[in-house]
Amino acid sequence: MKTFVTKSKTWNNNVAEVSDIILRENQSHRLIFRPLLIDNQKDNNACVKGTFIYQRKGSNNDWEDYIDPELYASKLKSGEGLKLEIKSEEILTLLDNLGLLKDLYGKHGISSGENTFIWADKNIVKILEAVSKIENEQMLQALAQLDPTQVSIFLQNLNLTKLEKLVREWDSNLESHKNNEKFWHKLLKDNPWVLSQIFACPYLLIGDEYYYGGKKGNNKGGVYGDF
Image (cartoon, rainbow, N blue to C red; front, side, top):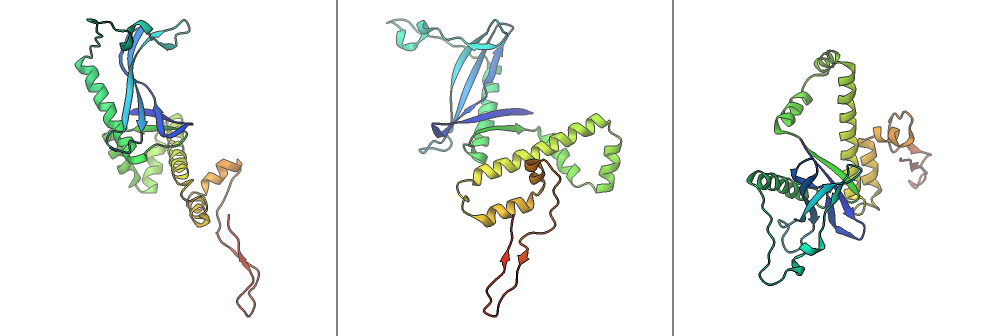
């Protein structure tokens, strides 16, 4: 499984920082590629750029960017040059990750705020698809055979996935549907469980758009209540 964390720039919604891609690492130094997702108006396929950075481990065991101003290309004199060797395995790691980032941009664009995206192994996806088709009774019997801790982790992951999916849908429609009450009504109707998360109390959806009051002979009067 592969995880990317993206964070949109507050000053530019067309750019998002992405968690570092580690290409080479030992106990004291490592080489990373720091990507940026961009909305490239000229070519949507050219949606990733970035920087190679050497890092070294600081006194608190935190990785710190190591930048030597003497190594800037602008400091080079006639006859001097810079050399950065990338091994074949490191190139493969970089290409694989850049491909995932391109797919991420194709599906989600630049997501506002901070977001976590997880790529599951294809075999895991097939297993989850098969699990989703199992009858309730069989599912309960299978869960009963698991350790309580395993069941708890499974449910936590399931709930987190539901919440993250809803947050992404909310964020992606915040501007385009900000005045569309019917859209938000339907979203809450389809996901009533999120109200329990918001208000920290049990919530049961009995119905929606209840009719109140009575109409007059001219077909006026009464209202439909909503969320």
